[in-house]
Length: 264
Ligand code: SAM
Image (spheres, rainbow, N blue to C red):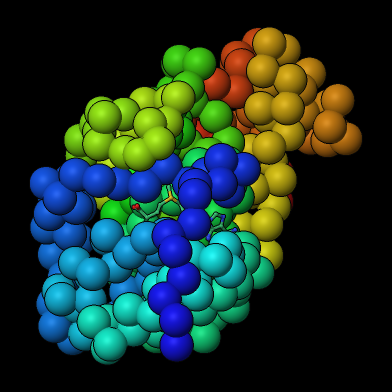
């Protein structure tokens, strides 16, 4: 097989490649991989992280959407004997086919990091932990506490599903080409047991989304505008001793869970 040239970066696909081996080491150390672990890597790119994961874990599934990079990585398959290279959109990949206990380690393509996060969190029963490089602003939203402008649907849904730590920031100089936004690595340890059934979780997410749909309005008005019945919302809030004039961003994850229960 002739070796394809390394293709130039495609900005549209969020291709900012890591070039700093120290950051690669720190990411892999954070994942605490064992030789028996199965790893899912989203976006292996030119393979800098894939190589390190291949050495630290038992098996790696690496999903790359760019067929040029996939073809390049295939030429290196002999160096990566325990890596399954998949050429597919990670948003369409059936993660349900991965073994339970899989660890996710990825420098995510930033343009789809939020839908990818939701997809991974939806399937959290399969993933023990995730070490993810994200834009710093998304990392801030993931760990945000009530009261600030970073706190929103992503914060509530992610903190409901996982214990999250923002581990370290990564300078733009560690990438080529350099990203225009700051980056950070987060560790998400998925919660083994969450309190809602699948159906209740759908309702919980709908409630959280509706509550934040009109951030500047009061909770009652935002929920009413999103089709919730005013009287039941008012009654539910009264039961929980939550003032109807409060805004969604002041409610804790626990408050949202109690409110979903009261309205359910
Ligand atoms: N892991 C490499 C590194 O750290 O240097 C590359 C990281 S780069 C930020 C993101 C990678 O995700 C790129 O290789 C890009 O082609 C790939 N990518 C973009 N969209 C994707 C998608 N929908 N599914 C899978 N991979 C995708």
